[in-house]
Length: 90
Length: 134
Image (cartoon, rainbow over all chains, first blue to last red; front, side):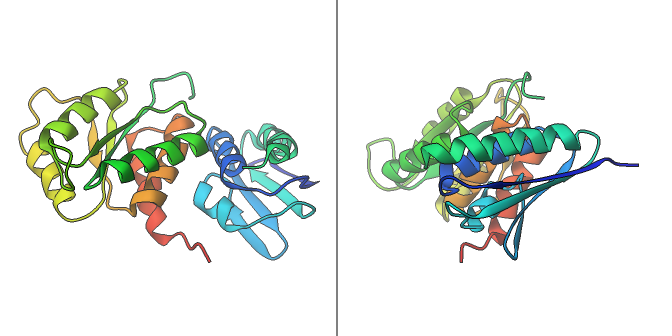
């Protein structure tokens, strides 16, 4: 039975190219499937192009949902990156 | 999987500036941990392609996990194919991506940075064909 985990964060900066890259690199290291939801849009967190395609901006809520053996670790790592990396911009 | 050697990327373009600029962009987005080598322009600096430049870029990009080659257009593909038709003592594995140049380079670099193998890196580059930007 695969584990499932979810958390939401409010962006403090735009999800531009560099933070999107950092997020996708981190997501791709996990075995779990990881999905981001912003409003009505969803993206595979392991696809940098899909993450950039969300066009997520400062103030928007991003939900990270992971399903798989390391779902909890994946959500914790990505929430950390969404909190930190978007401060720098890109 | 991040402790293993990473797949290297080779960008083959008719334009040295295009190859170098794309490498710079992909390197920034991918966090700078992947070797991205360029083979842009002819041997005497004109617009075109060079087998010798592609060959040396492949050797530069190889870190032990293989090399993904992204050609831009037309004769870049032919140049790569000509070289790979006789791959004597080139590193292995080598894959050639049928992908948009900029998007493919960015997507491939991210998966290589995460420690993906040559199949995963090739897959990321080729999936870039379906990525919508609007």
